[in-house]
Length: 548
Image (tube, rainbow, N blue to C red; front, side, top):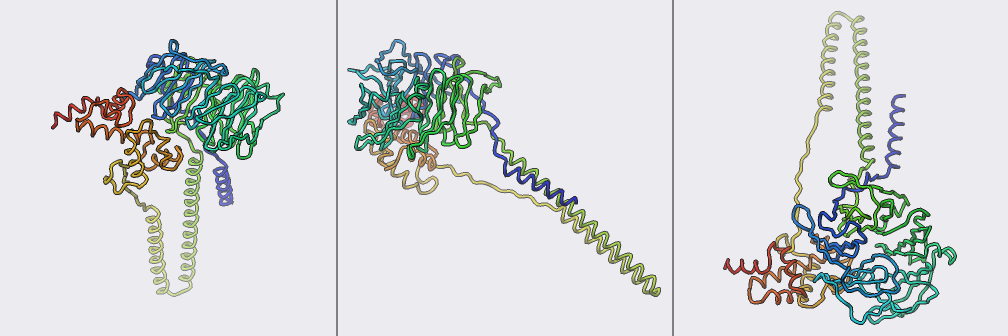
């Protein structure tokens, strides 16, 4: 009966272990960045991760560029004011702050009918000559699209859309198709090669669309699906659109509050900001968690609404609050608690208990058999003669000693144990050939392409990926896997090494070296060189001359 109960408990725990899913305890602890750390304003409007790893944080009429600071974890914040800077009209844009980065190191900031263009190398707002555009967009491939009346244009391609679809609110384009999102909820898909309209689709009819006509925000995930926030005066909806099937589905809908910014870190997860806090949504199961407060690294709890969210490719999470500044965490989630591990531990303890009970049962059986054998010997000795009795008694004693010895041996075996140890060799990937054997042919080819184009103006990650016949994301995954470096850092390291060699040779000025290594601004080159080598180019060159 006892064994049956034990097996029942074991079966129940096994089923519980199989049905248990991993649970996340909470968001991670955040670094709190405010005006005290150099931020222009605590009302954060937009956050954008730049290709060089720096962050562009937009506050009221100012763009804050965050550079990693000293070893103590502080940030070097450069502020670019917009209030007195030259701006240009965008008659067709009626939303709040939206920031894009193009492929030429320029930042475009849109806000309520205006646009600013910032040169990231000089950190200056640039005026635009003969600007007569109604709106501007930049797709995920960093291509600029301008809107004039009912025409959207990029490079030498133009596409005309219908006024019946309403106001153009958002767009996205890949290598083959252009997707336009309108205020009527209509989505128009064009073929980039033939310029033909392939199809139009809507998530709901025209009568229902008027409830969600105020704002639209579109984000495309890595699996090719579109996720859209549509907001109206009294209703808000979070939609999913699959271009491969042209099917719409509703992820989340509410008549309370409003939606602000959407971020899709992975095809399984969505992060969405709102006045109540941060929504964490599992796109596969539909489970949702609202975080109304966060914990700072100091241990203080901050309860606030969030205006914007950004997740960078290296896993960092950034949150912008209404009036409490910027929050930064180096991981998406706090340490995870896997309940299955605890269940496994319980199962192990149960198996040990079961083994102990079985051993005790077997031991009792042995003792019982031994007592029966002794009793049988006693009966035989009573019927035999005296010598037989004596011999039988000695044999019983010897047998009992042997059995006791055998029983003791079992105990010794059960108490025996062994220890295990091991060592792990950690191999560090090296950029230089010969440190850890032959370099991967793909890396050699990438190095050769970068070195061949060091003096080519505007040669960037997109062009390197094209020369290697692959997408930018594929290049990112390949280089991080082989070298643990992003493509931007990979190219910058090659440029910095060439610059250091030219400085050691001492035949060129710093401006000439900056130009030969692909930097359009000597000041920008000097700043990156100091980040890489810990000293200015002029000091580095002087030290090399003194060593000679």
